[in-house]
Amino acid sequence: RAKHDGRGELRFFDQSLDEAARRRRRIETDLRVAIRTGQFKLNFQPIVASDGEVIKGFEALLRWPHPDHGLIPPVEFIPIAEETGLITQIGEWVLHEACRVAAGWPEHVRVAVNVSPLQFRSPGFGSIVLQALAISGLAPNRLEIEITESVFLDGETGVLQILHMLRALGVRVALDDFGTGYSSLSYLRSFPFDKIKIDRSFITNIAHDASAAAIVKAIVDLATALHMETTAEGVENAGQHAELQAQGCSTLQGFLFSKPLDEMSTRKIIDTPRSARAA
Ligand code: C2E
Ligand code: MG
Ligand code: MG
Ligand code: MG
Image (cartoon, rainbow, N blue to C red):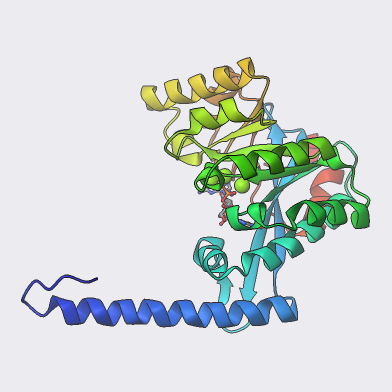
């Protein structure tokens, strides 16, 4: 509820809330159309070895080219898709599409797929993963599911069951945006993730800020001790790359190496010899 400060602020606040609400409803309606008419696309951002060259995999990133409003960023529509439950259907498409594309890559190249808490906890999730693997023919260990710790917010028990089910299938699991939540460490004790993705906010200042560097070092050492891989997110410059390499971070992702690419460009970047590839 908006507070009245006695100077007409209430009306102003109400109006902008109203506008925001209208925009949300509009996006919700348009999301339903987008699902029905197949407007979504996936981009794929390379995840490279610490040398910055060998491609270990790609992260699938959802794109919505809206017919009237142009590209709508995921940060804008994914929260609405989550609130309305539409994310479950959208996420099912993402899994199928990501597995289909990855099945065309060489066998050592993996695909990482972001899964929202609602989708992860939905009853059909396990069978949807199985179906996506079966239809695409992708080997389970080439699929990596990325979840954030927000998936645990409504309790751990059900989530751990799903994690162990994925593990039993041979699918990998990564903990995304590590360090941004409230109790990341406790989740590391609950489940042996295959990978920790260190949030971009820690990488940004790593080359200039001693405490940022110390935190990343601690995360890398912790992951190593727990036999988990690490990916640094949002690597944008050579200084960050050098620091992460020195710290033993196993894989890297960011604009320094490549922006997210469409399906065709992934084929090209995989096929281009490293020496001939511009960063
Ligand atoms: P995320 O999973 O942490 O994905 C990484 C985000 O960082 C992507 O933003 C990527 O484009 C961006 N990024 C990569 N390298 C750099 C860099 O060097 N600098 C900067 N500034 N940014 C970089 P994007 O594609 O806008 O996605 C944002 C978020 O939306 C993702 O964060 C993820 O949480 C969510 N998302 C994206 N696709 C999906 C999806 O298919 N399903 C679900 N549930 N969520 C998705
Ligand atoms: Mg991610
Ligand atoms: Mg992330
Ligand atoms: Mg992030």
